Image (cartoon, rainbow over all chains, first blue to last red; front, side, top):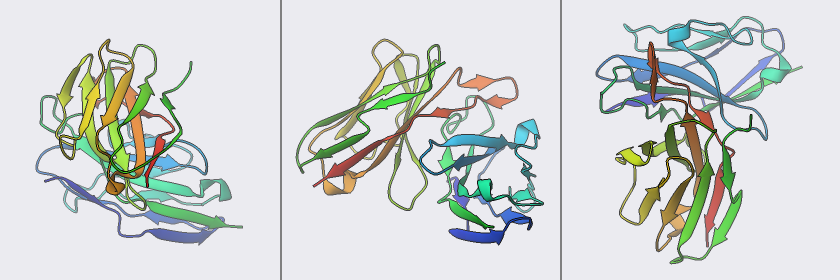
Length: 114
Length: 118
């Protein structure tokens, strides 16, 4: 069974400090990993996905297949980064049973203090 | 263009009643997904449509839950004999295609319908 674990429900940092939101996954196959973000009173939106290898709003995430992790990092947190962050995965192979449907972690609430 | 929309934004009903939740995907998106998010949890997959057909309904919790997408656009999630445990935010998402070169296509989420069963 596939599973996504975000061990921290709450994470607080000060503005300008580095931040790392942890994500570990369990999947027997080749997964596609995502980070979604939900700002206050807004809908869930995609932040980044591992396959595109982009840096969005200063955030990066590296897929570590050995440790089955996909931690989200930013070197200098900003107050506007305060939000709920969800790590999610889907099967990466077209035709696989979990292809397309997302499995989410429980989420981490990030608060960046001024 | 307009994003995914969901109606109603809030629905309060009594135990045992029937409810319908509506999702309008982004125009032209062929794939549509329903998720359920309980308090303090991440969204959980319910069902996925490709066009008019349900490609994967493995997340529907029981036969009280049913969803349709008769014309390949708007979808309705139907819940019969509602129970207090059905209270949650029901999210809809759509994507242009289920897959693109390199992997699954990006899903765009609606604002959700908050269902409260008294």
